[in-house]
Image 1 (spheres, one colour):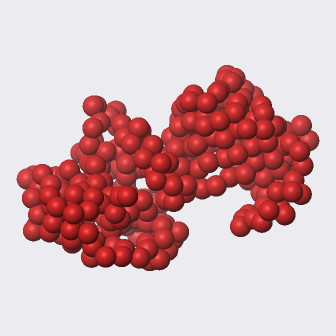
Image 2 (image 1 turned 60 degrees about the vertical axis):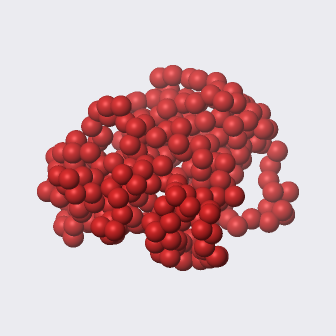
Length: 307
């Protein structure tokens, strides 16, 4: 993406790109965005664990941006909890809670860039710095040099419309969003607690099973990645992890464990509850220690071996 707030002349080009594309770019005021990096780079996928104080079933993806000096995607807001980790170089972030309204955007611009933006705070970040941006808080990051890379860890806030569509109903208020309860000592990232269901039920009448199906469903890209994954030969001594494109969550219905993977309920009757809960939260499993469960997950193309 090229452009700046100086002239509001923005241009967006979608990949894939060739080397020629980059040789034709200006010296500054451009940004390269790569989404879903956690699906392909193990080291990036591993970083998600640092944010497991937020339920993993709300996680969307890690996007990495590289920007030349002056590069930006303009001031904008969304309905995500976002953690912005500065990887290299320096970036200046302008933050604002003002004018975050759906009708405040530039016309004839490829992204929803805000027309009116007044910064409340300004932060200069360096490698290793993390900036948290709550939902519906505007942010505008501008690269201060030619080495600027930023990792964006995004956690979705579900809209009323999405939730209603999941149970085949029409929403009366499309501008309302699910809000988290206050998380207390969150050390079980795959668990859907009763407090989360209570929050969802403030928006619509939905039971826990349908909510679990909704929060673990896959988008079209992740479904394609799973379909093209070739598991290879099962290693009976191997250490496996849940495929990076998979979503998993669970809850306890009394003493009955119910697990959901990729929008469907997973049959847990043949496996110990403690083992299943451990796998859900850690997303890893050792075939030598838990051969039956690991083999079952492998046959369903849900796990990949860890090198």
